[in-house]
Length: 202
Image (cartoon, rainbow, N blue to C red; front, side, top):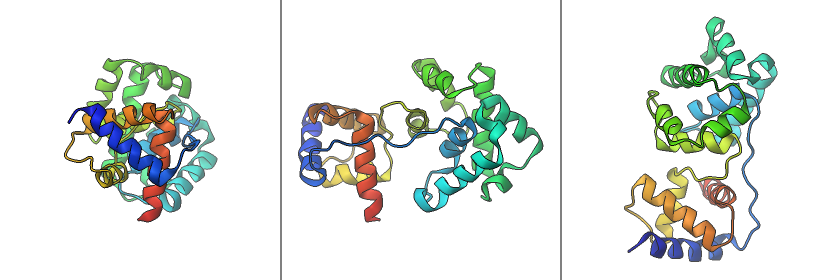
């Protein structure tokens, strides 16, 4: 089957399960410390009860980390694991890596990062950070307000229910994007509706 055929199956299932919308985009962050920590710490965690409250507290505790350079300055003298209340050395290392990469590329604010992600070379550069895969790159875009799709276990499960399975990350992302177009939804809003539906079912 082609990506369009898979997208049609997914669109039919989505309309039957989720209705016709409209679907709201996910919340995004303007505080760059929260953006970087969200991308670094959220995987395989309960987002609503575990990750989001910590990010909100980080913003309050580190207001000067609203820019990437401000966040980098905080990291130089403080323990991110303690600030986030997560004993997760690999995720802390990923946050440091993303921060250093963004600073090296002159990315300091949310608008900077939003625009920087327009470039394929920028997304490839993020992939060089240990712990950053294609899903994390897409997710970073989402948390700075870009309308796009990040494939996780919830989106894979929803697609499987529609009969769409055994596709690579990039193939399934394309299928979701095409399904969103068929349904006349923004990709980000469609993705978030699926994620909300499946995450509540877990």
